[in-house]
Amino acid sequence: MTPRASDSMATVIAAHLAALEASGYAASTLANRRLHLAQFCDWCEARGLTTPEELTPGILEHYRQWLFGLQQADGRSLGKPLGWSTQATKLTAVRMLLAWATRTKRLLVNPAAEMALPRLPARLPRAVLSVSEAERVLAQPDLTTALGLRDRAILEVLYSTGLRRMELVGLDLIDLDAERGVVLVREGKGKKDRVVPIGARAIAWVQRYLDTVRPRLVHARDSGALFLNARGTRIRPSRLTERLHRYVVAAGVGKPGSVHIFRHTMATLMHDAGADIRDLQEILGHAQLSTTEIYTHVSIERLKAVHMKTHPAHLSRAPTPAHLSLAAEAADKHNDA
Picture (spheres, rainbow, N blue to C red):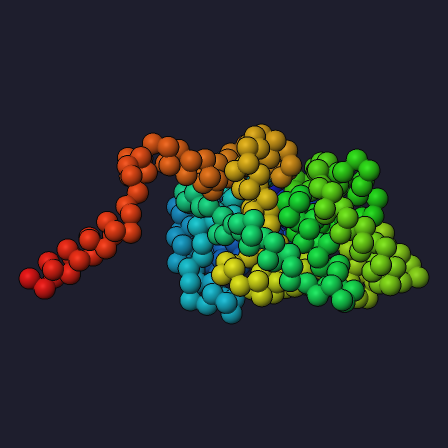
């Protein structure tokens, strides 16, 4: 196939997205990729660039610099620059587009072959709950209401399994195997299935929900979804986030988060208790071990134990109240002088 000069930027992008869809990419990934590439196409057209053949490494560098100076436009973060991760995601979409166009002979040379992505900082999870804080959040739903009891079951499942938001929303009744103590996650991130352990306490709360609440929520036509909303349909991801965020705030733990805070908490507390990082990788469904290794940095209990055993300040005798009183008197005399 020879390069087709008549192929516009929009045409190549549409063909690329169709190829990704045929390859089995998730709908959410395709939606995000379409958004990022539409932005790139608009940027090119505003500068008179209508075909991929017109792109050069220099032009792509200008686009990278434009993204660096771009201001977020949503109401919550107006005036703030795009985060490094967002910039990298947008540039990756362009780089994958042009690599595909080169492989399929729509381009002779890939202008993005040497394009560097922003170096992302290694960030720890924003917040992790302690055991007592997690229990406080779990206790927030009003168990006298149907949705409150449902929410308690949801919180228990998240705390026990560390599922992602969309994974929990996507659970069906047949995915819970209470006898074996496992949950089947169908098409998790990367469209991969996996089996995740679930504790007896979480199973008990889910069973209580199934026995007393779900029959009242379900309509004549049962979708088979595990967790239903008041209309009898599968609970919406955005609504789940809103409700769980309210519980975290109401618990007074002073930490930000909603669904994902339970994923971080579960992994961190299990690692503190001795769970192997590779076992956590399987439970969390991480494709790369490096993603899971963040919890070796979050986990602090082992470091505290080493600190207690080896730091000379811990090894010396702790000051008595009398010592502290004498020290305070000496400090007062020194200040008076």
